Image (cartoon, rainbow, N blue to C red):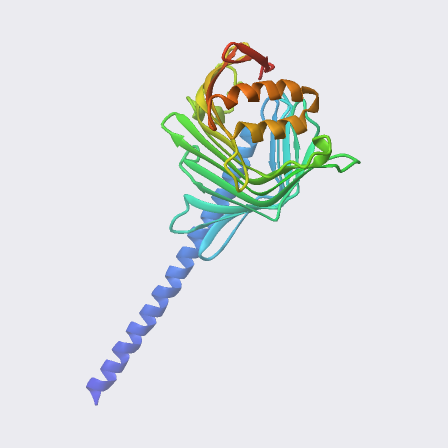
Length: 331
């Protein structure tokens, strides 16, 4: 009998010690989580303060860390960024992010619309969407990768007219560090332009894809970045195709923006089914229909998918030796 009592007391002590250990572990984990949450909030505020220098302003309204117990993420009631020097501003609704506590450098997020977008030389636009998701692989300095996707995106003029501009079934954007270079990918599915902008012509939906490498592009994320002048890169692929078909354009080649803002490039453009493309361009630009028909007649002799050299010299665009137009200097 005494041995049984000693065994029960020993079991009770072990059970109590085990329960105390669990309680202590929970309290320790809770303390660590709230310490990390407080650090996240303070670093967010510091990062925003660092952006608010010179002509730049940024804001995350009421930054709050949430997600206890198994996740941690940042919540903002609204977000805002402005670069007054370059005339760019973006504002949007609530932002929510989350990461697993055991993998805090891989985070996902959601952004609520609508967003107001202002850029130079263009009227202010409002963008709305059904769902925008963002994912990122973070490092101690800049994100290694960022991806975003939005569904059912609609663009309208942000004025009294509320005129629709364009819509897309899906838009995607991806960036990643490649050493000091920056790889960028933009994808649009079923992108359509409102007929009010195309002389009443109903333009079919377009699928687009841009793959671009910017040399030393990682430095663009620094506060001291002065703009795009002096930058160079390579268009790995720029594709515009009629959704569900093969008609379209594909472009690739190196490109550089000189210190004076003018573009220089040596590009190769492949036109699939040029007659179909010429018909669409003629509907959009009826005043130049005869000129476009003449170019199409020349392309028809080169096959169904001719490839042409397109050179840009100090902003002047040439197809072979024929001048096509000019591109204004960029900032």
